[in-house]
Image 1 (cartoon, helix red, strand yellow):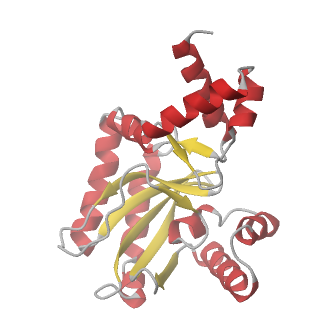
Image 2: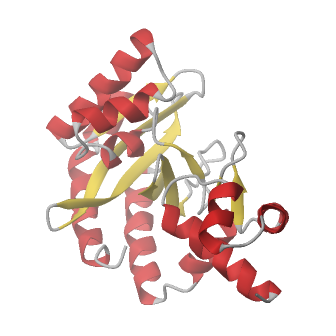
Length: 236
């Protein structure tokens, strides 16, 4: 297999996995040697085509999502217009997120114009747990799946509180709270295709000017914006 074919095979294997995957699994799926796969995956991570987690597993990287976003054409413009309109209405950073395994990945973002603001780059990928978009993206999951995802990172009272937030999101159609250690507040609502949640629309900003009460006052406006995004969700 030629070098470019190896790169493509590895990227396709990581994409098919849907969750963080290891060099060993990719080597088994592609029938390439582990040493070759490990080397290429490290090189791809250096070029941001893959993201390497602290445990050594890999996900598709920021650069891949940037390339996808750049190639959307009218669809990307339409999504960004909705985010810009919502940003102008609220003054805070707006963003759109999808689920990839146990991660929430930002696929579109428009930053606040305030000097002190939340910046979420396209391609930014973090654990679903402890994020308002994550609560929304897991709101259609079973209790067992939510418990399994949360238990990977939290235990005790923190685990119970997070599960309560996810149940609230499932029952009320939004999630909003502040993260004190980060000084950030966020709110997210679902964006659907039919009856399936395809993405989470979020607003976030510094808690110093963005309270949970203010966030909740924008719920109706966010639902309207989410409706505007629904026609663009079919191909996600």
